[in-house]
Length: 104
Image (cartoon, rainbow, N blue to C red; front, side, top):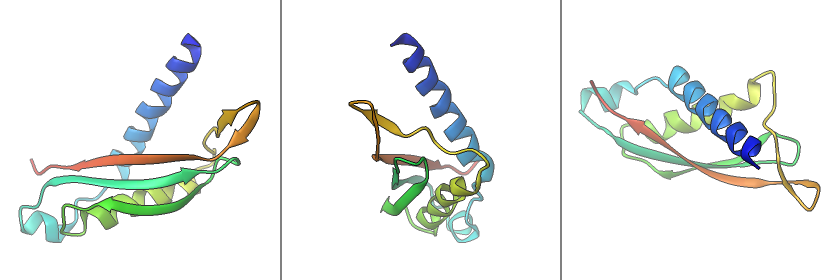
């Protein structure tokens, strides 16, 4: 069980590293001083691919669209996500991913 926790923590860190390495602050948001949290929902299928991506929260200035674009990029990675498991079978898992947009 402890190993599963470490694995999840590592996966979460890699996910955030990927997201923030690919995100481009939308010019319209930058020009208008828009900051905030975008939230994107998606499903990791039993095969490890990402489907059903949607913007749940958008602070404006195309931030939600940018977060969605980067989530969809994950399907182009050489490796897939490890699907959820229930009763020994791979299952779909829904995620809500918050992405913070902050001007520095």
